[in-house]
Length: 220
Image 1 (cartoon, helix red, strand yellow):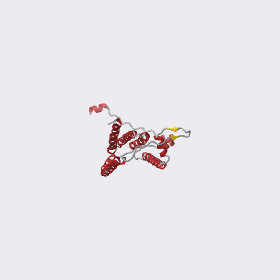
Image 2 (cartoon, one colour):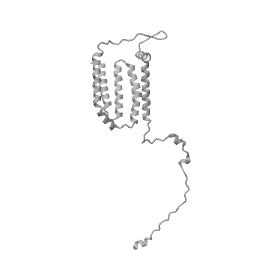
Image 3 (tube, helix red, strand yellow):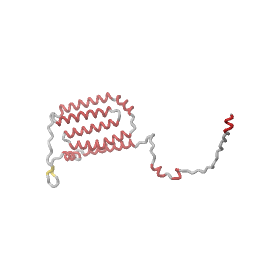
Image 4 (cartoon, one colour):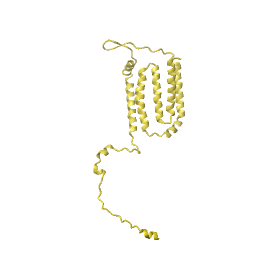
């Protein structure tokens, strides 16, 4: 077994463990952290497949932005873990059925799907405006496909991500009954005479009870 195969099995085992912990962790914060670990291992697999651009995008976009946003949202939301655990066991049979179906489909693709396909070949040379021949770049080829043939799917994905970001921000800004936040506008409009009110009151002296003589107490 060479080094590349060893890294493949290492990334795959850690990825499967992290994915399993995402759906079985009791704490939602721990589930998000395991999802971050799963994405990092998936980026390692992309590197082994010589898809460096996809690996870097997976790390920068999902690990650096999306998952950090999810982590902050989960930490700020008041999630009832007990209710989540009860609903988890109720949907276990359906989850197992879907997992088995996905595993069978992946096995069918791995065993028969790539047997007739040939190794992809590099595209032709690219010539810039000055007439110079540019070396082949995987990133340049992917960018040309994304913004020419797949422009509409890219725009739809961007709109979906924007809606997800707005929804996450709206969830964190919801009104809570136990919140003690104060409106800054009301604090600015407060005047000094509203904070302290002087009231004139007549001085009343309470009568002091007279103490009994010490000698009479000793006689009694």
